[in-house]
Structure formats: C-alpha cells, structure tokens
Length: 364
Image 1: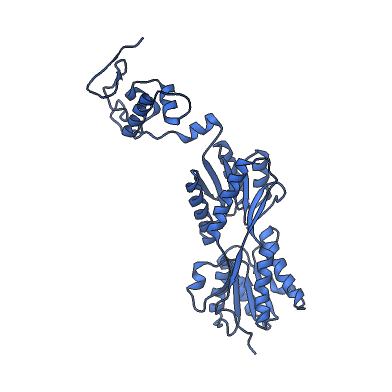
Image 2 (image 1 turned 135 degrees about the vertical axis):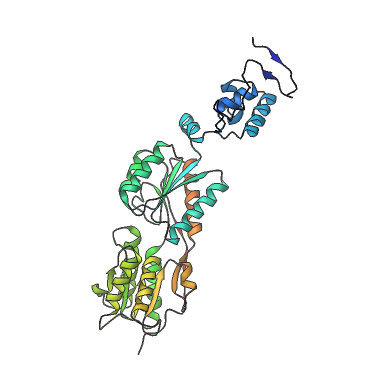
C-alpha cells in the first residue's frame, strides 16, 4: 500500500508522484494545456478516480471529488469533450448546416439555434456550406464522426438528409424539406404567404405582376411560386410565363434579371421577390434604370431584411421570426431525443405581411 502523508498542503498528497514541475509546463518549459494526467498527479489520485470525479459518473468519496475538482480549477483543466463523447457515444453538441451566413436570414437562424441550445445545455457546431451540396455532405460526415447529438440543416439537396437518416442521426430540416415523412422540420407556410403577398398587390389594382424566383425545385421556391400562381388564378389574371423569372442566387444576377425585365416595353407594374437577396438585386436595378418606387413600379419581398425598413420608401415584406425558427428547430430536436420513435412532425410557424410604402396603385 502506498504511504500517504500530511504536508502543509491541506490535502493528502501521494509522495510517489513527481511534483517538481507545474503540470502545465513541459520539461522544456513550454506552456501547454493541463491534461487529465496532470490533475491526477497534482491531486494524488488515479486517472480513473480523477475521471469519475470530474464527470460525475461512478462513485468517488466527496472529499476526494472536491479535491480533484479544486485542483482541476487551479490548473485550468478543461475536459476533452470529443474524447468523452467517443467513449460514451453521446454528445452535448448540435451540428448546424446553413447555406450562406452572408445572408441575414441564415445568420439570424444560427443565432436562434445557438441561443436556445445554450439555454438547454448544448453547444453548437456551425458550418456554412455556401450552398454546395458536396460541402454540405462533407460537413454531415464530420458531424457523424464526432458523434453530434443531432443535426439541424437548411438542406440544398436530398443527399445530406438521406445520409444523416441512414446514420440514425436525429435530424431537423429548416426552411426547406426533402423528407417530410421521415424527419422533423420547422418551416413557414410559404405557399399561403406568397398568395397573400400577391393578393396585396392585386388589391391595389395591379394585374401585370412579376415574380423573381431563385429556384422552383425545392419546397420553398416551389411553394412560393405556387402561391403566386394561385392568387393570380383566383383573381382571374391569366398567367404570363415571362413574368416568372429565374433570377439566380446572387444579388448581381438578380440585378441583371430585373434590369432586363424592367427595360421591356410592357414592363410589370409590380414585382415580387422570393427572398431578400433577390429583393436587393431588384432594388438596385430600379435605381439603375432611374425608376421610382412605387410611382413607376411597386416592389414586395419575402424575408424582412433589416435594410428594407431603412430605405425610402420602405419595402413591403413577408416577415418571419427567423430567430424563433432556429429556437423551434432546437426544441423539435430535443423532442426527438426524448421520443425517438415518435412519427416525424412538421412545425409551421406564423408569418405576416408588413405593408410599407414600396407598394401602391399602379400608374394610370
């Protein structure tokens, strides 16, 4: 049995341990982070006892546990979360995949996820895939390898969701859906809000209404274009294929598309942008052509970006609480952790139209 003595240190110390150098210093004097072994040596206990004392898993005498934790605090020791999750197959980290953090929609979404995750004791690992399906899948593989507890994604392809589902990773799709029958989702009613925004323009007297759209293959774009066409049909306005314009993913592309649309002889009297990026391109195009809003053309948009209330006239927009969207995604993920066999659920959050001065009756 090893002999334990009492020294001027208030805690019993194992004299068989070499304590000649601070645990956070290498023999060459180079500073480094403290390890579990450093804490065990300084506290005079075994590695297994140190691990149990710090993790709270397994029995450790209260006095020993307190001593180990005091030493860990003094040395600045931080547990290796990844190693712990690999051992236990459980993590307190949520993987988050978004399409473009330069877009305020995704930045606010990430903020909502981070805040709610922090409230419930989880951390967030955030990846911006820049809309690349390849990068998105690569990040998903990394989340699986590091044992992320679950993943929240704004998917740009069905492949990433299919991969995570095949790996049995709890998954929540946000804003866009590829597998409504196989995984949870948090969205807004895009078709209804697009219809209401189009109806707002129709009620002002517009009949030649264009829509700038990024895509129509994902649920978001498909639903918004469907709502636009539905409102026109209900109002008895014949659809004009030339007024549903694929404007790309970037401000500059949307700007060029809008210039072409507005430079025609029979230009639309109102234009609806399917998201805030397209709306910015549209706003710049109107300025390029010297047109006045809403005297010459009314504009409205999805996604109430901050700039829309700062310009003059302010832009009529569909506003959704994106921070709440992120928080709701975390709550849905937590519900999935608690009831893994529950049927997938799609949570639909409310949105509203904020009428501003960018929409008015068409020119006579």
